[in-house]
Every structure is written in C-alpha cells, then in structure tokens.
Amino acid sequence: MNIQTVWSDFLSRFNQSSNALRCERKVLAGASFLYIRKYDLKPTIENDIKIHSMKSMENYRLHSETIFVRETDIHYVFRHRFFVPQEKMFCCGNLCEDCIRFRT
Image (tube, rainbow, N blue to C red):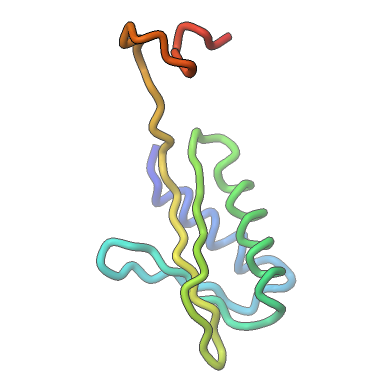
C-alpha cells in the first residue's frame, strides 16, 4: 500500500467535487497541510474533508485526522494526515481487554 495513492485519490476527489474551488497539499516539516480556498463555512468544509477521506480510504486499513490550523483572507488551513492504526498483532499474555485472542 502506498499512502501517496490515497493522497492523490483524496485530492482529486476533493478538487472535482462541485463545491470545492481548489485544495492544495503542502508538506512542511514532515506534516501535511491542506490549503483550501474559502467557498463555504468551516464546518461544511470539514465535513467535505471527512467524506472524501473516507471514500479514499475505503479499500485500505487507514485512519485520518484533521485539525484546523488557521484562517486567512482566502484560505482555510488544515493539518490532515492518513495513518495506519497501531494495533496489537500478538498476545502478550497479560489478559488485556483488547487481546487479539478475543477478535472474531
């Protein structure tokens, strides 16, 4: 699995949606930021990010996280990332509640 494939799918979906004017990804200090032109209220844009993220991740075991950073005259800036969930892959013998033995 390549995260770049998920990113390119997400950006193309977001930019092709009827509401979006332009969404651009910039990587600064290893963190990915979305610069989105203002076209609607912030909650609506956050919802669009969530919807397009879910559609881009549906064939992969990934999670996404979006954090609002700032607002300028023409852009909203969000820190957005896709990541692989960290889950236990073996039983450690401590009878944990989320033990892999209890999965069905």
